[in-house]
Amino acid sequence: MKAKIKKLFKTRRSIYITAVILLTIFAVVLNYAFAAFTNRETKVAANITVAGMEYQMMIDTVITNTFIAPANVTVYKDIIITSLNDIDSRYELIFIEEPGITIQFTNNTPNPVTGTIIENGTITIRLAITNTTNNPINIEFNLNAGFIHNTLDLTSVIIGPYTPDEIVITFNANGSTLNTPTGCTNSGNNRVCRCRPNPPATNCNITPPSVTRPSPWAIHGWRATNQNNSSGTAPSNTVSANATWFAITSRSVTLTNLVTNSSFENNFIGWDTTYGHQATIATSGCFHGTRCLRFPANVGTHILHQDISQNLLIRGQQYYGSAMIRGNAGNTNAGNAFQWNSGDNNLTAITFFMNQPFTNTTWARASRVETVHANADFSIPWRFRIFIANNTQDAFADALIVINLTSAFGAGQEPNRTWLDANINWFDVTINQTVWNNLRP
Image 1: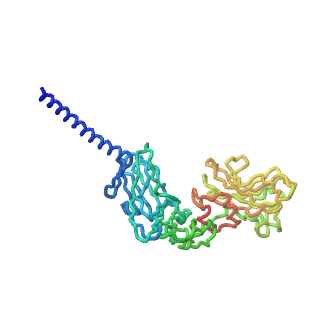
Image 2: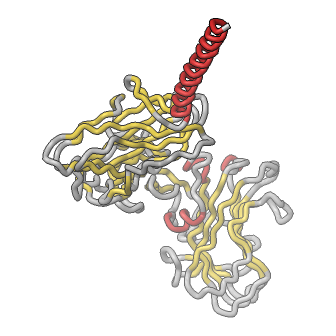
Image 3: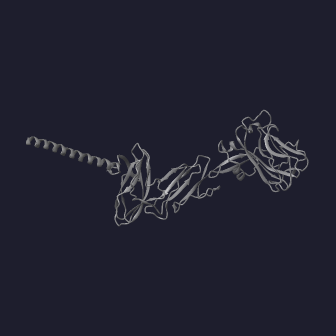
């Protein structure tokens, strides 16, 4: 009986010992699993595995997570982290702290030190690393990471921002084509160059990108302001503050004034005065030259017109019309207009100005940009006409202009009225107009 009891006891003890061993093994496995889930990392070659997820780290252009900080200097480094996971995750960039080493993020860092990285996404963290010792020190970077629903226990070993920060120069293409200088990035049509002198200094060198434009554009260089002239100078390679440089290019555009004898220097040649009543040519006080059109007061309606070749009028194209007008204070009139039409009832007429008061005692421009209507009827003659009805004071007109903008500048490149009023002065027949690329058009 005693032998049986001893045997049973031994059997139960074996079971007990076995159970204890199994529980111990389970606890160890569970502890490692929990440790992995709570962001304990191990490095595998150039990649970093954290919480069951994997990331690749680069320092500047080298796949690595270590860097030797030179003695007694501050240097800039880009830490580029790529997620190798098919899920979003949280991250914090960390490093193994060393005496004499301070690491700060810069004001211009593309991504923060801690945040979210999307599945298979890449982030860049720009750092300023300062070594105050007399010896080079090896810096080892790592990640504190977890699933997107985790809350990371941040170490906050990387502080910031670092000042003074980088110098940033933006080269504004102004529609030109720019190469991308070494160390610069594309931002739309612009090039953004970040000057990060190692060690930091008050200035650094950035070589401007070359400007290319297809013929007939001419290249004039760069300006620190967006300005409508050719006095462009290349920016100095040595820069000391954030700035934007604008490319200066130009082309010559041939403009044709479609109005004949548009400043009345040849009196009424080219104009039909059948309905002009007592319209006369003034020989003093004109806007251009020695002659201009005068509409005497209180004599009814004055209408002057000239027939125009039909092939000058193209459906869907834009035209700019302008006239200089002058009147007298207190003038009233029943109506007036400078237009291109084929009769009073043609609703598709192009009207460049209408119902101006003619009360201004100095010359003023009246203008408009209009598009030829898609339903314009070309079966009857079209003509330019200028008229005024029942004016109570003398009125004057001079320097008429009509330009086909679409033909001159190209479809979709037509300038607006503001630019035209500011840049197009009266001309007879044709001119070559310089168009600056840095301002409209």
